[in-house]
Image (cartoon, rainbow, N blue to C red; front, side, top):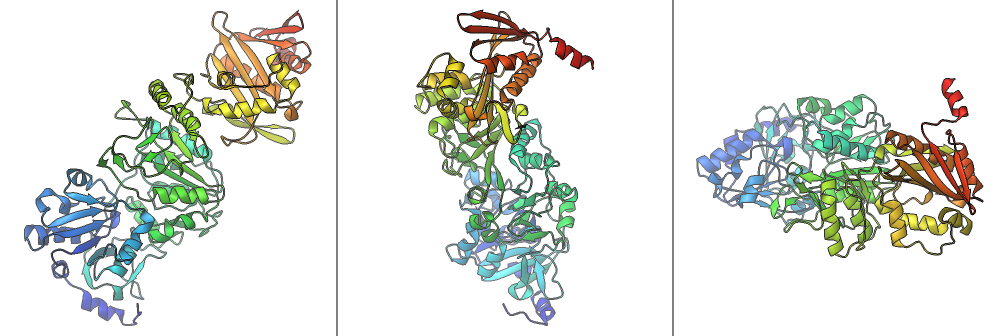
Length: 632
């Protein structure tokens, strides 16, 4: 593209009415239309009048990426004049695609520019919307860069609506007047999409996701209920960065509060990297000429290779349905296309490749007012797999987090059932047993809701231990923990020397409901694959409202106060649930366990019988030492 000094002369020569510009389009042409909130509404309306009302055009294919507006050209009345082809199905054309009067072309977002440049989808005309030119003749593509530059470079004829309402965004987001063939000046407000207020389910999902986000992470955030809820909950984080396809108004508050400063980014540090934005005038004014924001085409911005250059990259994507093996459907409801592939696969794979990256799929556990489970034994007939089971890492619902990467089908199924809505778990359990994914005697307590609020890190001397409730999916971790115990520790815990810890025993220790039976484990870090180094359990006797307690600590972590801490934690949880007290039976030589009970803060009742010691204390009998501490 030669840059000429007298560009204003060329600008005047190319300036014309919308009608004159659109008359350059011929029947049978393929026309690219700028997507999202960058859609040139005036030119589109004039095109519909020309082609539909005046019947001057037939069989014009309109290629579009995301339709936010009403898409008048996709109405049944104009089906002989225009044929809409969506590269991502937006709300404006969802019905048209479903009814068969519009098309859908599935494709990764990052590959759309090469589709145009390679000639596999040749473009006759590109209709775009830009800012007025700057002093050097450059027009900004504003809020919608995506594949627009590739369309401009590939199309035989480019028509641009010059709109003073379009913000001037920075980055690789400029088109020179020389590259435009027809200029139509028309000012009109951009399409706006206000932020969606998150509901309680979205806020709960967001809490689970926010626990996974570390300070200094770089985020991919979109728009919608769950992304907005995630952004609302990040106020206590520090030094976050943004590398995303799109963003909305919700990001502004995080930038102004200092939570998002992009200072720790390892790819384009200091910059919010995006390819388009969808929001309100507040957002458009905020990004206008703002050097913090860089807009780039999708083949650069959404390239998994470039995404992976961000350390601690967290990609958050939503889904319509996920099966128990981890297959993610995000683009269709059965055979009915709902959206598209978009950038989900690009960002999931990019985050997986990034150092300390976290790819996350988030969805509510149910649909249709709670009547349908989104966690399913198998995807619905016709459902498309956008993210494969091999790509999935984290899946999050309002009931918790399932980590699937590197897990067997059995482990995945158990983890997924745990985060399904409780009323569908028995059904899922039966279905997965029939599929032979899990053991025939597999137990996942009905109604058990993982108490995420109990997760925390505790310091013991010079080391930190992550404390959390046990989960049914911990079965293999628990077996590994037991096999690492010394013979003496095994004997003290089980009153016998055991050489095997089969499924039925391990399952009994991890399949808890957090009410009548409770399990707490200590691990080396917060990841789901971190080794267990300590465990504590209770089982409630309903008749006497007393709980039988047992706990153990891996040999190399003993005598650090971990057992004492776990007992005190169990006491607090038991008291909150109205349990009367604790009992335990220990071998008389297990002096460590006895000492832990003696330090419980309650009057200890003991009974010796044939080398075994029965220990019991009630919560309504504090010891004198505990009473004096409380009085002080």
